[in-house]
Amino acid sequence: SYATCGELDSFTYTERLRSLKGRTFQVGYNSNSGGWKGAHNPSGSFAVNKQWTGPAVDFIHEAALEAGFTVNMTQPPEWLREKSKEFFGNSNFDFCVYATSLGYLDFCVASFFITEKRASVTTMFETTSDPVYLITFTEGGGQTSWESFATATVTIFQPFTAAAWMMIFIFCIPLLGLLMLYHEYDAPGSAYPSSEPVLVESENEEGETHAEVVTRPIPTIKHVFNSLYMGTLSFFAGSYDQSVVTTGGKINLLAIASFIMLLLAVYTANLAAILTQEANQSSIDSIEMAVKQGLNICAERKIATVVIESFGVDPNKIVADPVGLGGDGQPGFNCPSCNARERTFNNMRRVHNDPSQYCNVAIASLEDLEVLHRYGNHCDKIKVGESIAYRSIGIPIYDEHADALVSLLHKQKAEGAMTRALAAAAPSSQCPETGGEGSSLTVQQLTGVWVITFSFALIALLANLISRRCRRRNSIGGSIRKERALRRFDQWGNPPPYDVVVDGYKYDAEENELQEVSVRDTENMTEVQKDGLEGNNVSNDLE
Image 1 (spheres, rainbow, N blue to C red):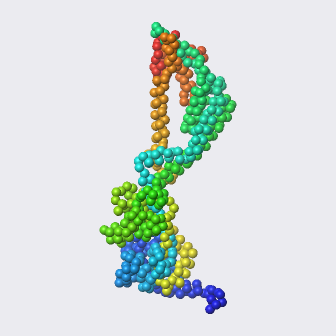
Image 2 (cartoon, rainbow, N blue to C red; image 1 turned 120 degrees about the vertical axis):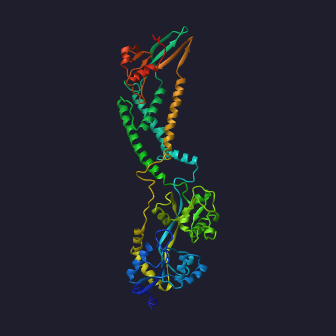
């Protein structure tokens, strides 16, 4: 023999394939109730017609053409069904496996989960594998309103880490602003002069009013705060528009401009990616987290068994098979008339009060979810985290024909026949896009924008109220003194395009004095100037 000589029979493989040519095999076809990788027929399992479709069907038919054998669609003997129920249970797939193990069928076509019990009675050829995932709702279905608000508020800060934000606002912006103050301080025409003219109004005991223009030094701390404000404003405005007159200041302006341009470009790109992807995220990202939060789970029976054994999940947390629909009341759906695989998704609820019927999350085959998304169903459900397990999928083969058929099918699989069949049948999702280019952002996703914007608006109102109450008034002897700055600047430190008018007097910066405004001048004033005139009412007794 070849074994005596320590050699293999090189003709074995060829003889196995040759033995298939011209044969006719009795084959049972099962229609998978879920997924897309198996076999499907509108007339159901064991239908004898030409309406069979699916990757498993295409794979077997291509193998038949390659080897030259004929497939005869055959129904297993009905009298075997009760025997199959006693051994396996009430399932058409188990029925087909049972009939194959006894030789009434040569093999079956569909996606059969390869279980220990099935593999113990007949040969199972693995065609592919099926990843199992945790399925949950999109947009953090388990969060409370306050948690959702807090999460949405901080989303706008997610492009950078806390350390990066501290580097930006505590170091970079203040440093660049203070450097600009250093370069521009007391330079002719700069926004940081060392002194400023102020109008000093006084009223003596007799009620007589006197006003004069004097020059006061500007406290350094005022310039410091002003430079910090300018730096922060330039960051939010996207440019530094304050007038710069010195050489050092102009070069420092390049540093500020490059800092703003690069930082805003990186921030915008990262924030766009975060916001458009956020809608496709879930607050539950693993089965361990689901168990820790006490959520109950929907799953088909075989998957429920794997989860209980592998992850130690309490069986009471898994929704039981409905007795009213022919189930046995055990964890996991297995009822013959309730479409267990789709029921896993149908019974999911964000919030519910009936754990005996509904669940918060599910554990299901990825192909089941892909099929539902193909028809635009259950679009609010997604897979999260890594795959929990992989289930081997294959077909049962009668042992007497196993050697030849398994050799052929391995050859076909190695040549890519199964891969091509799966690629041709892969479903395309009809669910609307919730992330990516062109997607619309919701009000909740922009919560951080609303919070920051109206926080600044509220601070502005408080600052205005405080400034009205803190006008400088000094009592000297029996008189009252009040000082008001005559030079006005816009938010960038630039002088306004109109004159400063106080109670009919215009401030002349060159002469550093107040000049009476004539009626003709008043007629030529712009609306802004007139507003300034009307908004600065003091006594008409100015000297």
